[in-house]
Length: 102
Image (tube, rainbow, N blue to C red; front, side):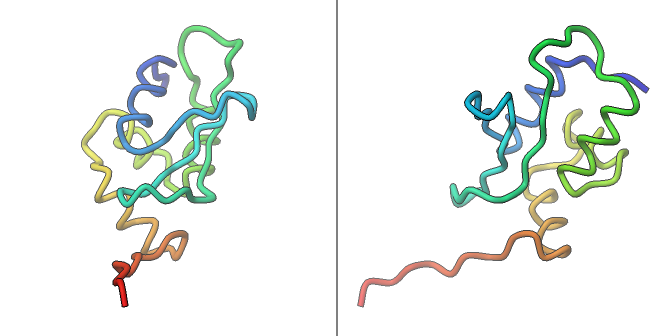
């Protein structure tokens, strides 16, 4: 299995990952509430062309997903909300309580 590098980068950025170029092209996941998480993945800035099967598996592991779930995240069948549900179930993120002014 192979995925186009640009498609991978665009796919994950549309699901809440933001590229941090100061950290060697790490993409860090931010929740729908805008909170930074510890979930991050790395895309090689030197490689061009397809992302091979081994790298897809590594990126999936970094994103706390199974390989096919990661492919779905990139290709859009797995929504951002569904991804966050998976992360919550695995206790990587939690729901944020709304702040109240008291």
